[in-house]
Image (cartoon, rainbow, N blue to C red; front, side):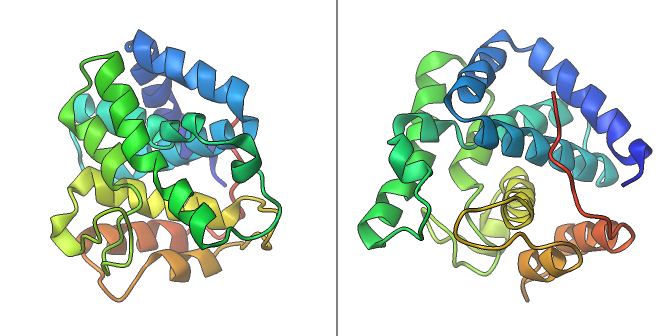
Length: 207
């Protein structure tokens, strides 16, 4: 994986966090709570920032995109650790509990600081999918805000390329096929194009 692909996004990421002390506090709590979740959040944030730069998103908004992706799973701090670390697939009731991390995350951030709406949108919509099969609202297509679409793509990509106790890790280009549905738009085509030129497995970001 070329160093240049991540050099500037990583700088953007560091700048975003250092300029937002509250986000840094939450990120520190996340690291203490679950190191794997922390690493996945960092990796997703760097990928999202790289995609945002490619899409021409303004510098000030890239910071919101990075922070939103860093904190999109912050609601999992409120869930039992045995649920998060269960070695088998979740049953129906457990899955419904897991899905509550979205609303819990939004509530945590609303109560802790005055976060920009774009960041809250990422936390709220990062599990929505373009084909309408996501949660919590089953939105589809452009019903999902742009930053929510970006977060959803990178979240799914990191999930299928990260080690999981109940499934094998998928290496590119297979994740590209998993993350790009039939409901393609200019965003997903840009993401697919980016991945198609770099087939090396993705390593977790260390910070």
